[in-house]
Image (tube, rainbow, N blue to C red):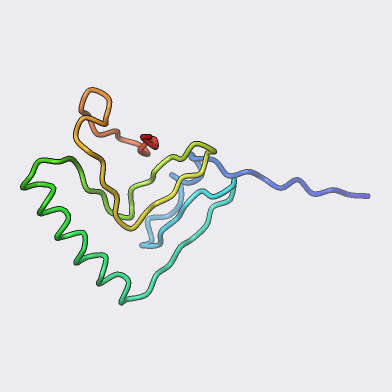
Length: 104
């Protein structure tokens, strides 16, 4: 009886995905694409603009868009539509170059 080995995708695999406008995430060892519709995109742009203006004015922290990967405890890397990280949460106050490690 033949068995097939199911490969586990890694963060490195996720970083190699094409820059084609799609939203790729690492979920339970698999690369997944998460498309959304036009109405969803319009709402996210409006919310992001308002949130960014408020956060910048009040100097509360950082706002990230959906292309930013968030590394979760079990190895998944998800890309929320909008993310906020409070000032002082990044090590030495420096925004990381790679994925953001989930901050509890």
